[in-house]
Every structure is written in structure tokens, then in C-alpha cells.
Image (cartoon, rainbow, N blue to C red; front, side, top):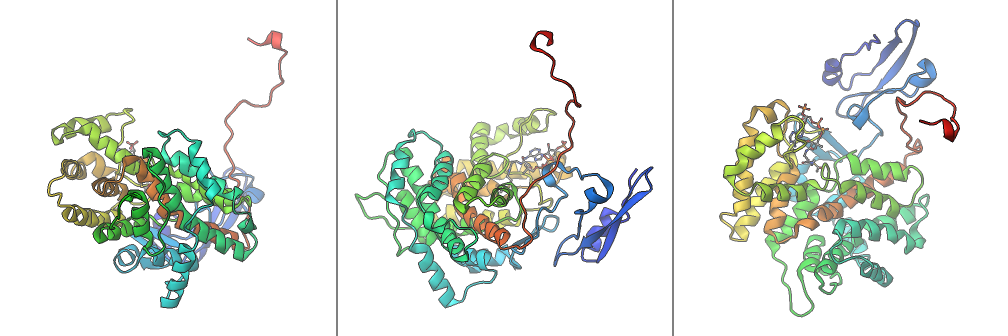
Length: 447
Ligand code: ACO
């Protein structure tokens, strides 16, 4: 047995204590002392960079549950305590006191903007909201029933073929302009993906509207008549964007970092992030929640569905429940739940059957031993799907909206990585369990 001198419980309690971990390889008499690196908050990390050169072994951590792949100053999560901070500020305060563009500025630049900085940033974003006219033609190449995430992945990736003047990742000005372009253009690309799917004309962005208002406008307006943006819905949309803006090293952000570590341009990296977000275990969960609720159909069928979820090897999951990091509650879910009720009240929906079903499902699941013992609680997507549905957003656009919000986090994380002088190409190792070395037999001798 190899033994580590620091038990996990001590590491959690004394997370900022300096020190080291000594690892001994049984039967060889060889050992290595690895430094512990403290963060400003959260558990310290063991710096294993000398492990292979000293002991000739790798670490094994499929899913990276215990592995810090990078250092970051952007977002902090304490999953047990249900804490989410951006640049030190609690998500609850940001959602209450800031707009999405203030949060975007914070993520990108490290501090909240003052009045002048915010005005300049807002102008920078709004001046980039239109997309190259030739990119319009891309839409015609898709089937009308294409999933808008497929369109998003393709059109955002195609941006690298259009904006050659901001592709030098080593030039800070290029990085700045690319960030503006991505944050500004993704709502336009997303809304056009929707308009294309329903055969309506594309609506060009309006720079007199806020980021959230403009997105609602491009999604819902038609050229034939005026469109008034409902302020309560715009505020709810802004809050949804804030709550999805960043979430440290999740699957899609890690994908963006890994792609970016090769020196790929930011548009290609964000397209990779969008592809990674698409899956139902990640950003696709909000869409999956709605599909699940439709499948359950009625509160009386909840016990039957829960039984299916709990059955061994059923492969059915309660969508919108559980999180890799939050093992108590998801702080975003609490804010989302409140916003959900505000939106339903504004829209005069006293009893939305789907919401009643969702609330009953939440009540049943949160009292069930299966979910309690596994620390499975509603996550942000459990409620966001319901709000978006009430706002009239088509289900297929839910994950797209998540991608619009998360673009800010992705580009902030990408920028942080490029500006880190210690950054190297991301290249995980593996535990090989395939065939040992062997010779290729002639075709006639193969069984
Ligand atoms: N429903 C039922 N059982 C679940 C669920 C769920 N939603 N989530 C986890 N479990 C069970 C697993 O079956 C496992 O049980 P076991 O110990 O008996 O085998 C145990 O809980 C631990 O599950 P893991 O898969 O190890 O948890 P992991 O951290 O890898 O997965 C994830 C996290 C992917 C979010 C998972 O909880 C899930 O699939 N949830 C549903 C999808 C979802 O809502 N995703 C959105 C995440 S939030 C976001 O992306 C914004």
C-alpha cells in the first residue's frame, strides 16, 4: 500500500495550511515529498508535477473529481456549503444588484466596473452585435429542423473564418476584440438559429436595448409590427444569464481551456465549448428536464417514475437533480426558484400544470432516502427550464441560451489561461489496459 501523510479530512479542515505530502512506493524504499499549494479559499492541492520523474507513476482520476487541472482567480465554489463566488462576490448579490454586462465585465477583468467603465464596456459590446452579412448564408445550408445547438456550434466555429483581424492570440488587443465579438454576437447567432427554424425573418440587433432585452427582441419580434419587451421578463432573462455566466472548471469550460491550450483561436475554442455543453449531463439538462416532465405527464405518475430512476441499471436519471460539486444545494437553484415564481406571477400563470408537477416531483425526491443519501438536490437547470418554458422559449433553445450566457465565462477562462505565463498544452496521461506488445500475424493466420 502506498500511504499519504495527510488524510483527506485534515486537508479539508486545514485547507490553507502550507506543508507537503509524502508518498512512498511500497517495496522499493523510494518516496517523494510533494508540496501542498494553498489557495485563497478551499482545499490545498498536492503539486504532483514531480511524481512521474521521481517515482515513475501517474495519478488515476477518471472524471477529474479530485484533480485541479489549473489555477484560476475567476470563480470559487464550495459544493458542501452551497457557495458560488465570482471574483469573491456571492452569486446571490450579483444576481440581485448587477446586470449581466456588469458580471461579464467582472469575470473578464477581475473587478466590477465603475460608471465610465461600464458605459465603455456596454458600447464595446453593442457595437459588435451584428454578424457579417455573409454568415447569414450559413443558415440556409441547414435543414429547418436542425437542432439550434448544431447551428450554434457551426456558426460560432465559422466566425474564425470571418474575423481574421482578431485571431492573434498573443496580441492583447486581438484578445480584447475577440472577447467583445463573441459576447456581442452569440445572442444574434442564437436568435437567428431560432428564427430560421420557424421560417421567420432574422431580426437585426437593436443597440438601444439592454443585452437581455435585445435577445428577447431578436427572438420574439417580427418586422411587421412593433414589439415591446416586458421589463419583468427582461429582468428574469438577465438573471438567468448571470446565473449561467461561469461555473469554474466544468466540462465545457475545461473543453475550452484544453482546446485553447493548443493555441487554437478563440472562436474555435468557444465552438468546442458549445459542443461540450450540448450533452444532457451538462447544459442539455434544462431541455431534458422539460422532456422528463412531459414524459411523467401527471403528478400521480411520479412514484412510478421515481421507482424507475431508483431501479438498478435502469439508466434513467432524475434530470435537473444532482451535481458533481454541489452536494448540499445549488445556490443558483434557489435564486432561480424565486425568479420562476416572479415570472409566473407576471404572466398570470397561477397554476401551470408543468410547474405543479415539477414542485411535486421536487417535494417527493427531496424526501426520498435514495436522493438524500446520495446528496442529490435540484440544480439550476431544474428551474431554468420551467421559467423559459413559461416565457414562451422553445425547449430546443434552452441549452442555446445557456451557451449565450456561458460564452462570457468561457472567454474569461480562455483569456486567463492565455495570459498565464506557466500555461502549457493540456495533455492528460492514461492507465493503459489494452493488449501487451505483440507481432502482427499474416492475414491467412488470423482466426
Ligand atoms: N438521478 C438519479 N440518480 C442519480 C442522479 C440523478 N439525477 N445523479 C446521480 N445519481 C446517482 C448515481 O446513479 C450514483 O448512484 P450509485 O452510487 O448508486 O451508483 C450516485 O448518484 C453518484 O452519481 P455520479 O454519476 O457519480 O455523480 P456525478 O458527480 O458523476 O454526476 C451529474 C453529476 C452528471 C450532474 C449527475 O448528477 C446527473 O446526471 N444529473 C442529471 C443531469 C443534470 O441535471 N445535469 C445538470 C448538471 S448542472 C449543469 O450542468 C448546469
